[in-house]
Length: 143
Image 1: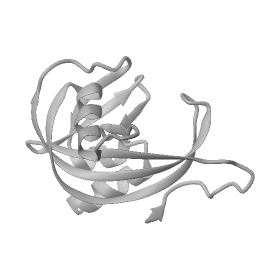
Image 2: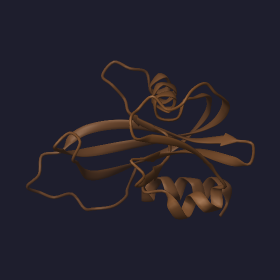
Image 3: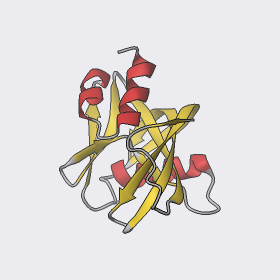
Image 4: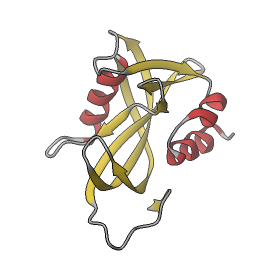
């Protein structure tokens, strides 16, 4: 597993937070989510205790984009040590990345502040907030 971003701070207690994210292919584009008109991200998020990883990816993608997806293959994972202001805590985020097919759009995003975007992979690499997400998109598409 490789680490992306900040080094571990010795005086901080980190909470383990697994997450799962999708590089979701729709025709020649990838499906992304824009959060609060600020951050562009791969759809996905935290895996709730007792939840299956694939179920979490399907659920999170639907909540953030309104799309039905089909996860195809796990590409890998990375971890980040970050402060999560929405939870007021520090976390060791373990981010699993899957390649997926975007099947069809069912509705508008259910999560407030989210907007679904379709974007060319080359453009997405420049705009994705997470450096780990950028690495996986770049490597998958050979950019």
